[in-house]
Image (tube, rainbow over all chains, first blue to last red; front, side, top):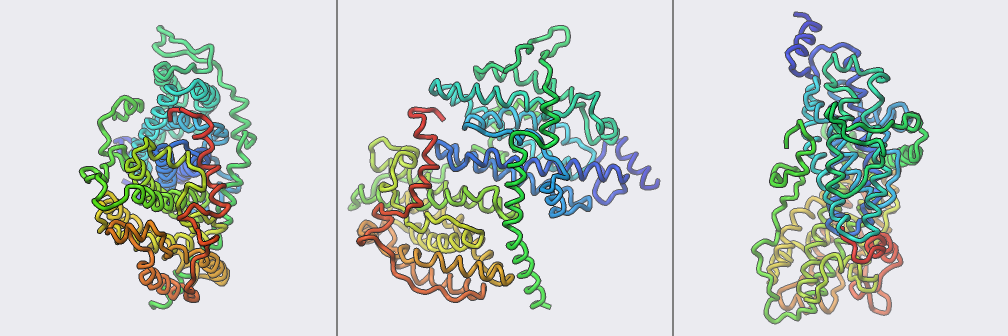
Length: 308
Length: 294
């Protein structure tokens, strides 16, 4: 069999494509783009929650949040490494991010206004991320699928911590309960947007399904997320901000209202509430660190020269 | 947890062991006797636990402020990790202080409801790092001093302080190694990094003297075999700093005396303006909702 036949055969048998295997250029490009966007999302995603570490209201919550943000840096590092197995370069991918040439999850372009946002991000945003990512543990590209297993385990741990924070806050003062409801109101719709555009308007989906990079459609995963979240919201004692949300016995699923796709497109295009701040922050960290990275390279070069 | 239903994890409470950073942490003080050793004034032990706890809490805050600002992802993880270690040490020490005090104050009451004058950390911990060179210079001095201190503390007659010291030694050994590695890289790297590293090392030196000036409580507890006389840490500290500076092609650190205000310093609750800023940020939310459940 030639490379192409081996590739097709691997997919047909539901086995994994590995970095040194032959693969179509389009597959390689798609994988690099998807993994890089995922890595960028982890790194940008450190900002909204990281902003609350210094202000966390108990030392236990501070430790949990600091560990979570550290996990996100770890996920980013792990994913950039997976992209590097395909010939990409981390520095180059970072440049693409800060120059706005590659995307990250648009959810992180919303602000975190209160500490309840930390809990709701764990519950809904990490929850949606897990729904998206659990099927990717069976993605056809080996390093990505394996990275996803570890990441999903840690994400579900974060989700549980977020939900536990909200449960605790709901047992607190009236002001705290109001904070949880307010945060739920602000994050619910953006969380639904995390699954991407409706299937009819998702340009890359068909090819990604054929390559077994993707396993379920955007709408399928979104529906699953809604069905899972409704009982969670009830247990918590909050109302999801959608008057059209109700159980449909015929479908065996919850019906829900129309997503504001105009807002989604605006945020994707860079006009969300925090797009400029998120990228500017990442750019500043990169620029401020340039002399440090140059120094490390110069030191390493001197040492390898001295050893020669 | 089944990967088919991501939400299983929310109701599944008995699977902590497989998480990299699970909730199933072993209590580092499990089985350690908690009685105050004979011949020790409990008030001294409270004050001393606060000194070492506040050092860690305030330094951790400075590291937390660097999260999302590091030059590389590896450093992002390292800085968060070091901040987390110090936060863990602070929690054990503050809890110990509250327990010996017996007035019903736990770690959070002590962290969030004391004003600057009630904090007993050294001023050095409060410094803000204006660039990465200042951060690693700060961390090198802090970790070198603290490692020498915790190492001796692990032989304390107080079993709780001894256990905290022994646990901390493993952690702070890494903190010192991380900081020293960067001081060498930056000092030896480029002309720009050398100049920045040298300026950072010079900026931190005036506050290093305080680290070795014993407070009367430290002396009383050291005589009782419970605490460490910080003056005894100086030779080890000087050796390490001299070695690191040499590798970093930086001038050797000068010997400095403690800077005090009318004879008082951080251990007495006399701080720089930075501590009030740190506490304003740290305590803001906890104080805004009295009686809140978090």
